[in-house]
Length: 350
Image 1: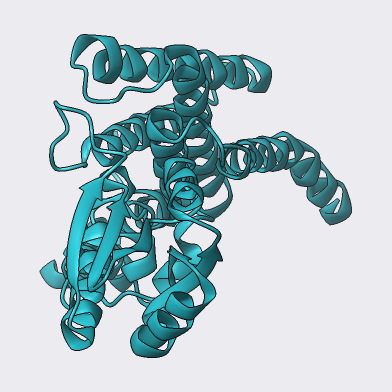
Image 2: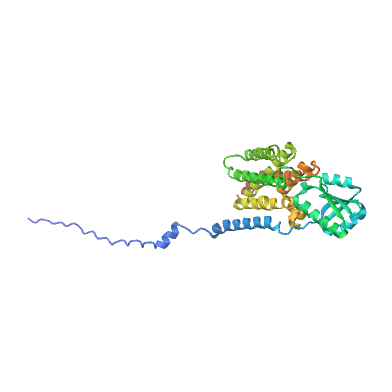
């Protein structure tokens, strides 16, 4: 009997080639990409620009301050002509009828000083120390130089002196700087609240906090420290406008310009704005470009308003207040239009 024998079929399979291992460097490049050059350059450039602008503004403007058309009242047409020819473009001579008229002009902030003839070979100089130490010192030197050439003696009287607790005349500057800085910080923080707060709520936040900043600054510098003798309520209003102008401007620049917005706000408000405010170096002693923007930027407008409220009865308050209000209002308006502009661009793209 034959027996059938079966054998299992042989299974043969060709080996599958293993994938070539990726080179270690290429694998590393796939996992970690090099950061773009802009990520390195942007913070470096911004930091260097801010440092250079700050040092140039604050130190450069004090290197060689020169008086430019500083307004002074001079009694009598003859003396006015002589002083005008002798001092040239350093002063702007405004003839007045008598010494009392010149004093009135000084006390109302229309001029920095008033010069009159007090007798043979004698001149009387009435100054406003509250107009700024650098400015009154420059005018006094000019008048003394003229008197020396003419053989006259000068008797100087400070008819609008600085407050007792502000002997150097820098309280207004530090107040404006502090309020501007607070507004800048407020606007910077508001940039991060877009997802948490609606636009109108952010506006109320900026407005309410600006009013609080103004009240705190006015009370501390005025009644508490006695360095700023301005009426409290008008001072609160002025400082609130300054804080709002800084806050809304900072938020505007950050919203429209992105990461570059805050450095730009730092340059405009905290660096150039404060350096050219006319507090540490009088506006009439600044170079042409700095003198041109001094009263147009919020810190410069605020310094003028604080000085005018404190020492000159608010005679020239309207201009600075309007400047501050325009900065705050225009920035708020442009911020309010931002969502509409964004929706319009999106609709056009679709």
